[in-house]
Length: 69
Image (spheres, rainbow, N blue to C red):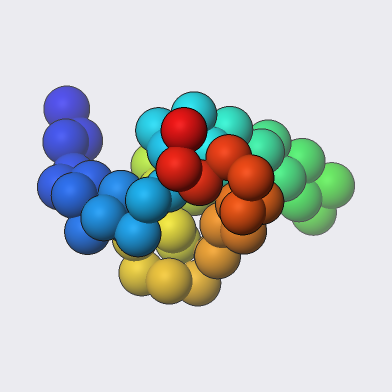
């Protein structure tokens, strides 16, 4: 099971809800892109999406109003 250290991402007051939502959204995009290109994924789209977020390739922008909730 893939269990990354999320403290680095969540230290910037990013909520877990925003992280989960962004990961799901990016995973869906990865899945749809692979399907459109006829590509077979060897890893799960959620794993690929989380790797992109952890590597800083996909940036989550959270509105200022909800950052301190």
